Length: 63
Image 1 (cartoon, helix red, strand yellow):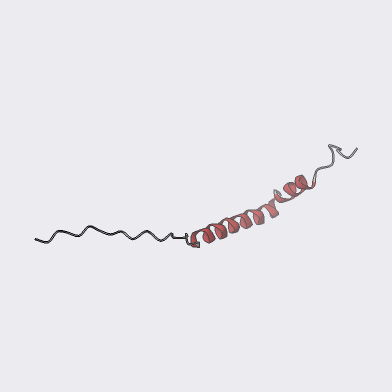
Image 2 (image 1 turned 90 degrees about the vertical axis):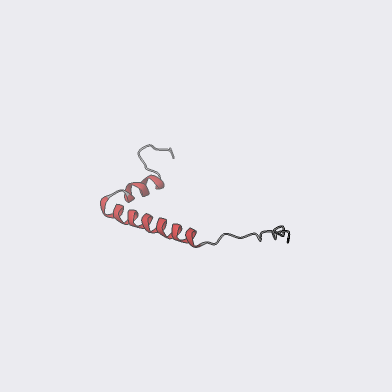
């Protein structure tokens, strides 16, 4: 009798708690702050530059 359909799972209880009006504003603001923080962090990461091989230009013939 562990799978009684009347008893919500902990995840379902958390979702139901998070979508009620006072908590939903906090959840929305927390998600917005998390997205801003992650995008800011991703934007500040510098790509690893591989040194380009030296390019030698052909010298122009002297007249």
